[in-house]
Length: 239
Image (cartoon, rainbow, N blue to C red; front, side, top):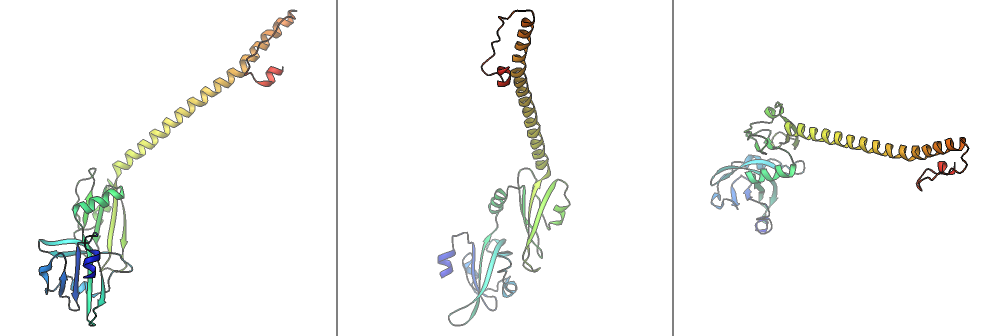
C-alpha cells in the first residue's frame, strides 16, 4: 500500500510483491496475475542488483505479452514475519529510448542483457533501425563510432549500455572544424597584413617628409618647414 501511494505514477510502471516461493501477491500493472508464479521468480530470489547495479533489464509479463523493463528488487519481511520480494520497474518503450537518445546527443542508444537477447535500441535519422541480438555486430561496423560499458559485476544482472555516433557525422564535424580554423587563420592573416601596412605608412610617411625637407635645406633654403601629422611617431617628431 505504501509503495502504491508513494511510487506509482512517478515513472514507475512495474510494482509487484511476491512471496518467498515466487507467487504474485499483488501487481499494479497486472492485478489479475494474483496467485500466479512469476516467470522471473528465480531471478528475484537471487541477490538483487543493489548496490552494484541500480537496474536490471527484465522481460516482464503483461496482459499484452512480454515487455522489457528496467527493474530493481529487494527482499523484505512482513509484520507477520513472512519474507517477500518487492519489485519496482519501468517499461522501456520506444519513446523512453528516444528520450535517452536525445539526452545522450548520439545517433544510437542500445541496452543489452549479457545473458538475454535481443537488445533494445533507438537510432537517429542518420542511422537505419538496427535490430540487435548483441553489441558485437555494432563494434564491427565501420560507419559507427561506439562507446560501451557494463553495469553490474555478475553475468546474471549485467547490462551492457552502448552509445554510438555516426562516423559521417564525425567527419562532417571535423570538416566544419577545419573550415572554421582555415577561415580564422585567413582573417587573422589579413588583419595582420592591414595592421602592418598601417604601421609602415605611419613610420615611412614622416620620414619621406624629412628626406624632402633635408634636400631643400641642402640647396640653401633655410625657410623649409616640416609639417608632421599629430599622430606621428614621437622620435620622428622630435627629429
